[in-house]
Image (cartoon, rainbow, N blue to C red; front, side, top):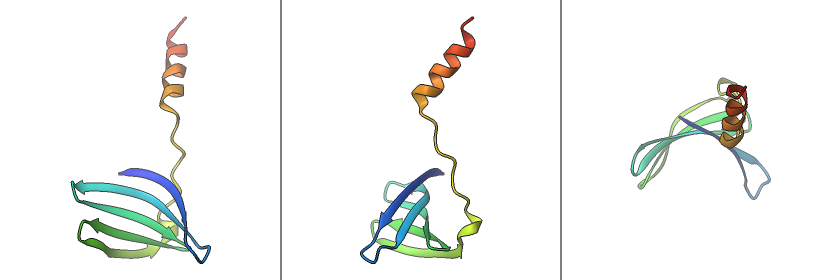
Length: 82
C-alpha cells in the first residue's frame, strides 16, 4: 500500500490527510483519509466514492517520511567504497 501524507484544506479550514492509497484495478482504489480524529476507509472508482469503514484515527499511525532514493543510493555507495 502506498503511503502518502498530503493535507488538503477545505473551505471551512479543516484538514484532510490521505494516509494511504492502494490501487486495485485501472479504475478503482482504496484510500484511508484522516479527518480530525476519524479515519475513513474509502472505496474510489470511476462510479464514485463509497465509505467502506469509519474508524478511530489512532489506529492509523503517521507514516515515516520516505527517504530520498538518490541520497539512499549514495549512502550505500559510500559504505561499500573503501
